[in-house]
Amino acid sequence: MIDTGYLYSKDNKRIFVNTCLGCTGKCSYCYLGKMGYDNSSIVGKVRKAEELIEEIERARISRDTLITLGCFSECWDDNNKPETIKLIKYFLKKGNQVQLSTKKEIMLEEVKEFGSLIEYLGQLVVFVSSATISKWDTVEKGTDSPSKRFNTFEISKELNIPTALYMKPVLKGITKQDIELYKDVIRKYGVRDVVVGSIFGEKKTEETIHFSDKGILFYNPISEEFEIKRRLMESGNLRVFSRSTEVMQYYRHRIKDVER
Image (tube, rainbow, N blue to C red; front, side, top):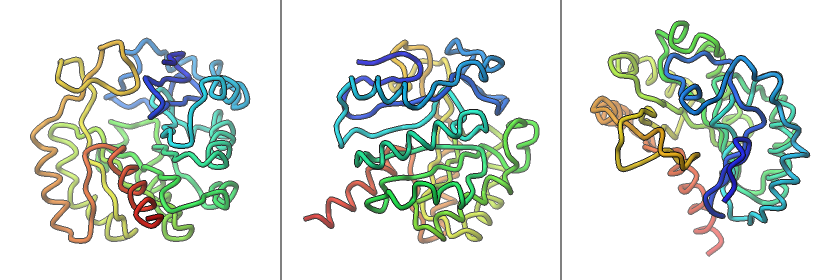
């Protein structure tokens, strides 16, 4: 087991990697404060990718270990983006499957730095995170605007890198109100994968968060999640998931089916 904040894993199946501890997003639902992280000190806590790689290699992860970038950071902030890109290159070369979620715009030119290293469809999956469209400037006020961050979906069309809409967390009375706006985004960019996810809260449930074993935060689903999923599935050719790992498993199974 590893637990340094920058790195966390319970076993060899998945490792969470953070290049810094903190986020500039200023989201109203942010859980970092409950985990003991101070967003105001983000600049001073950036770790070099080379240092993290040394620790990761000592952990002896395998090619089958799922790499999740972020959870205590916005991995595409200007201050830590270069380190994130170095890590992506490292893990792709190792053959690992990599997932990252962001509320920032990822531009085609940036992805071209490492796009050629991808061995199979779904080795890298990008999740464009959005809990609201109409109220983003108050709920997610430190993030890129939805119209800007949704440009990230272009990398799916241009570079064939799966890019999922990450509707997480679903906020009561807020996310559902934008369902038609989300449908417009799905149609405009040809989105194929959507995750409708629960908020992290302190109410104890059967499922604790996966990036810590401190028993502080849990998945707290609300009934509106089910209605959102139902209405999205009316859109037709769309895969709707509850967890990002389900998306990763979907693509992993696809490549295994091809190999067989």
